Amino acid sequence: MPDQSPTTGPSQAWIVVATYNEADNLPTLLTGLETLGVQLGVCIVDDGSPDGTGKIADAWAARRPETATVIHRSGKLGYASAHCEGMRAVLDRGADVVITMDADLSHDPDVIPVMLEGLQDADVMVGSRYVPGGRTENWSMFRVFLSRVGGGVVTRLLTGLRQADCTSGFRAYRREILEQADPWSTRADGYGFLVELLFRCQRLGARITETPIVFADRRAGASKLSKRIIVESALLCFRLFAQRFSRPPDTYAGGAGGGA
Ligand SMILES: Nc1nc2c(ncn2[C@@H]2O[C@H](COP(=O)(O)OP(=O)(O)OP(=O)(O)O)[C@@H](O)[C@H]2O)c(=O)[nH]1
Ligand SMILES: [Mg+2]
Image (cartoon, rainbow, N blue to C red):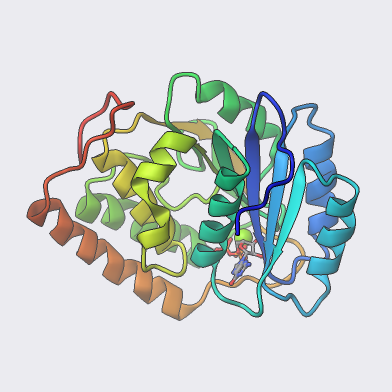
């Protein structure tokens, strides 16, 4: 049932943060969001983290009932479905902009005002590690290779995506494009979800802009990236390749770009 509590007021930008065992990181992230000086709603989707992340989120949100909400799920149900639930919840609360970011401090909240500004002329803003000014810090050679070749070159070749960073989870979407791209119908579980969502936005003709980010590797907690998620993402790219030629591009009334 949709949450009927009050919303954030005129700006109506909500952040969706998926968390699983981020107790060492979440307090720092929340402080960073609070000190931004931008009015934002925050929705945390926690999957019953054994380390107590959900309790930290509850205590923080209890002090801000109008601008924070926590969704508790019964167990680790996946990155993609956590984002889908969070997106649904904040749209139900009236969000006109939805921002997604990770809780592990890899995404710097200071980029959020830049993204909001960018949405004046775009439907989707991607926090990009691979445009001038962007970079990754302290990543292993394997992660750089996987991200730049698998998530970059190969993904772009197969899907027709035009962005330098197709797998960044730090993004801002206008409400209308998100609703039309329908993230809730994707089958991906891991970061393939991000590729599929961007693919749909591009096919809809959305204006997609990248802004540079410095992506710091997590210092605390464990990565949830698994072999299964990597394989899933690779297979998904082939499915999207087939879709490019088997289905006509959708169109988005608010967009100005072309299909994939
Ligand atoms: N609710 C929920 N959150 C998740 C799940 N898997 C990952 N997350 C969160 O999603 C965000 C990204 O996950 P990460 O583990 O950082 O994955 P990654 O960024 O690909 O990998 P590393 O940065 O190397 O750790 C973090 O905030 C995680 O806590 C999940 O199954 N459920
Ligand atoms: Mg991470």
